Length: 150
Ligand code: DQA
Image 1 (spheres, protein in one colour):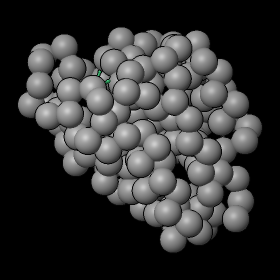
Image 2 (cartoon, helix red, strand yellow; image 1 turned 90 degrees about the horizontal axis):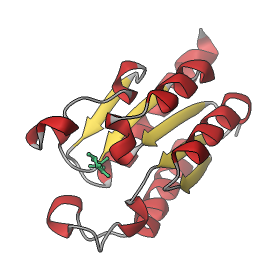
Image 3 (cartoon, protein in one colour; image 1 turned 90 degrees about the vertical axis):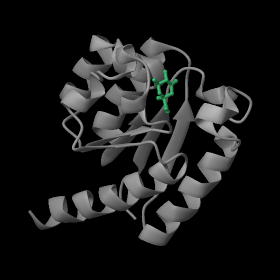
Image 4 (cartoon, helix red, strand yellow; image 1 turned 180 degrees about the vertical axis):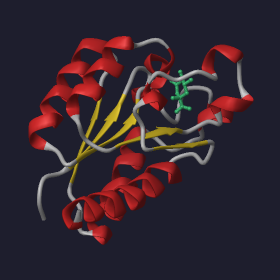
């Protein structure tokens, strides 16, 4: 199966389902994990699915991914809009990155409309709820297969 895809989630995403359901939906993060797991299996990928409220821990996981993963799907939550440390870690990882947001950040407040993660992401999926994680894994399957060929 090869190395896993790291599916990393940032701050407050542990509250998914309870937090502003009109914005983020009613599925919990465990529901999202189960959907992502199932889709990954169908694609012949394995995933390492994690969440942290801590910027430094996310940086550490991205550094770990450099050695242990073949790609990163990242919903960095609010750190997407603020964290140069996460951007630096992603740059250093030298892996394909797909950025996911449950909500459509471009329909929201101006401060959500810039993302540092986007500067290194191969693609960005936003506004499609938990399905975005499935689409990200589908895109990642294509990217890692293309990488093997190339
Ligand atoms: C989010 C969008 C961010 O602006 C916000 O801070 C989040 C969640 C999303 O998935 O829509 O925490 O990344």
